[in-house]
Image (cartoon, rainbow, N blue to C red):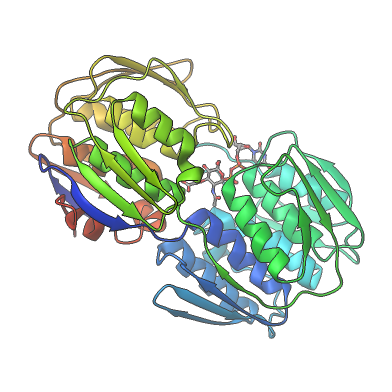
Length: 418
Ligand code: EPZ
């Protein structure tokens, strides 16, 4: 159990660099097994989920080295198709190795990823798509075993614009016979980053970032060098830390275009934001304004991963805000914890609508994080609250944020982890 100890009240002021994106790096690391060559991945975040991915790659027979933020994978020796359950169950994104291992070895065994604290998170779209391409999949509820003598490119229409399903099917399609057309594909920037990496390996992927992705299968892929895109959720989290503390923060190594809608809402809350091609400066108002209504949607809509930090910020805003979580069915565990800090949040419509009556100041409390973004939101709330807050965390925050306490301390936040 991690214990984050936060003393609230300091203004957040200073400059921070933003690391590479967790949700871009994870599918790209899975993609490295698609070639027999060596891939070099720069700007890779040093977070727990990357550590798990490296262990999986090594188990599959790859040579992996991680120096500073550069991760090198030599996948020549990849010949193991089963992912050990102690690794796969640590990280839901291990499901992304299904498409990659079917592409490279035409076989994969992996444990069925359970739900988690933000919802049931089914993988039916992944499985249906892989089956359409020719994979035979046995699923006993604990393990899945998929085999494909050949993988055939197919037109596949996704019922939901699922990020993971889009990525998994791209990974399976690049070495399939013929063309795969994914319609209602997810449009997140991480999909585009994956396509850039796959194309640099010799794949033919077109339309990434739109709702129709076309993949023309090729015979072989080679290793490639790639720089992971900036983490847009870490970008939003750091901006929010300053926004909640009458702060003034300058972020470098960011892509303002990827956080366009988040910036629009931060401006609506009263923040002044200056944009440059790779940097952002946010100056916060003395008091944030409420947001009458905010809905989480697939990209380019408002990202669900920024919902919890916004709930935390709006808890201290002037006025009443309403946030509707439309992507995951139970991404609300942080609400009860914020209420323990004095927030006035009521849930409606089966825990998917937050009605937040802003209060001048939250107060410190002992709270518990139940998921990655909720944990970050509680730390931000602690920075803005009166007194001391302790966030008990089972390792969620470390899965997605590289050195969050050190980063926040470097801009005036009093955050320590035990
Ligand atoms: C990715 O999860 C991200 N994770 C999530 O970030 C992010 O919140 C989510 O996309 C939405 O943007 C990674 O990229 C590693 P989905 P993913 O498939 O792929 C339903 C974080 O905090 N669905 O786009 O699992 C599903 O239940 C994490 O960094 C099906 O019904 O999300 C959900 O309601 C949390 N069947 C919706 O689609 C399926 O087969 C969107 O899920 C797949 C998904």
